[in-house]
Every structure is written in C-alpha cells, then in structure tokens.
Length: 111
Image (cartoon, rainbow, N blue to C red; front, side, top):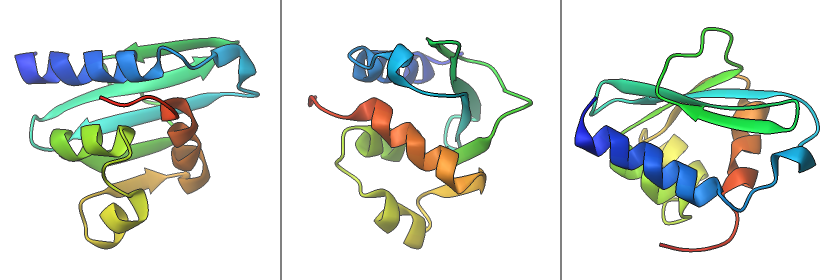
C-alpha cells in the first residue's frame, strides 16, 4: 500500500468525520477505484455504522473510477461530478443513484 493511497484513505476519513451514519436510512456500499494508484477502497454504511477500508467490495452497489487527485478534488467540491463525468475524469459502474448518495457524506468543511 503506497503512502499516497494511505493519504487518500485518511482524507476520506477526515472528510466524513462529521457525518452521522445513524442518519442514513438503508445500506450503502461504494467501491472507489483509483486508476493512477492501482488501488481500491470501499465506503460502507450498514446498521448505522460507517466503514472505510482499503479492500475490494464484491457486493458493491457502485464503483467510482477515477484518479486519486480528482477524487480528492471531488470530495472537497473542487471538481464538479457532472463535469468530471462528461469529461471522462469520472466513470461510475453500477447504481448511479447510490453513487450520488455518496456525496451527502462529504458536505461541509474545507481543506
């Protein structure tokens, strides 16, 4: 696991620290594939608990595929997801609605 990948995971954990997973109704399992690092991690909300782990998630609802720098820009609102999709900087496999729900985890705050 590269240092850059560890930093991405840490950024995601920091960015979601204020999110209350008990406020999420249902189940969410999103994998993030970082194309430039060749690494994957997942974000899961289940039974009122959130997990962010550096592993593949076989039963994921969606897979977000993009470069690590663009992913970080996206979670901080510095890269618009619609723009990223239309310009090929972001690819989503699976349930687009579930992938969109992921953005609710990253509301508020800045770098």
